[in-house]
Length: 357
Picture 1 (cartoon, rainbow, N blue to C red):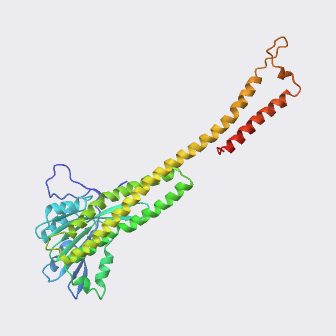
Picture 2 (cartoon, one colour):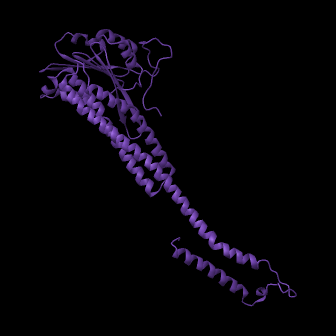
Picture 3 (cartoon, one colour):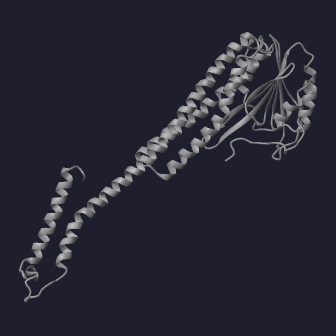
């Protein structure tokens, strides 16, 4: 099962080479928000390079690109904003580890945003370029996951947002990316509770398969959320003029959320592991119960088999002192039945008294 789309260059490819992914899809949509302290302008552009008209304005610009951008679009975007070739390569080569890279006058960030629809876990790579007065966000999804941030900027009393620097917009996006893990983990927690109840009531192989599936998904989340916590630590402690001390306080809160997510993730992984142990213990206990019943039945029939085996030999010789006189008794047959029933009843009484039945 592929949890996120991966695309890498062939070995030996020159650094900074942009090669389109084989599963490249279109189209790409470009949404731009240009804002000052008192004004917000929102437009949809046909091409990413059309945002050049906003570069010379004394304002802050958020360029949101949704869809899988092709190499030509990235090259033009790189020329327009002077983006590093290696950073553009990482944008195109999806499946990267969350990280922060500092270039001369810009920051490059890769973050992981998880989505879960109840059956399938998908981890989306979000790439962000941050300059002095611009932020470029590239998301391979067709739908914009950052609409909640856009709604905040559209509100009439948005001065608290728009009066801050571009680093506050970066915080708002990173906060949404970080918090997107909470509903995913909540869904995992609900599934674990249902599986635990089913496991205790009637352990089945199907339930065990579901637990192993959740463990794989939790492991995949762990692989991206641990480095994402390191990313938040780097942003919280970054000594870069693009991130002010005031905004670092907000990144500290975002880092706290990352720590909570990791702790919740680890607790779910431990819970899933313990549920596997519970399943194995339940199966072992069920096997032991079955073996105990079979052992009791066999123990009851062993003396009965012995009695039947003796009288089944039919050694009847009138001239021998070693014959079986019981074979000639008038009540010999019902007497043997009475002895066997008495033995069986005595064993059953003994087993019940010892608590074995």
